[in-house]
Image (tube, rainbow, N blue to C red):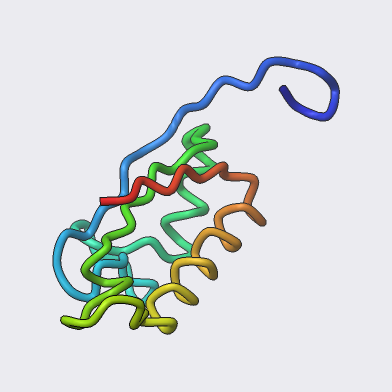
Length: 96
């Protein structure tokens, strides 16, 4: 429900980069792996309000030892979620 107590219908895309760096590029547009400001603007233009974002455990905890996390990867994931949210796009983090 939105702030006006209306049902929200989600229309969106799946974003999952299944190899290092396990995040879409925020640089130049690329048909295969970018999710930059231009991509986000297109999603909005096309009526999208949802992204299913793949988050990969081997990126979050890459080493052979437990409880050693890649905070750079996690920070970038949070920044992307925040950027999408600022554009009015809801995000479901799909842990793999």
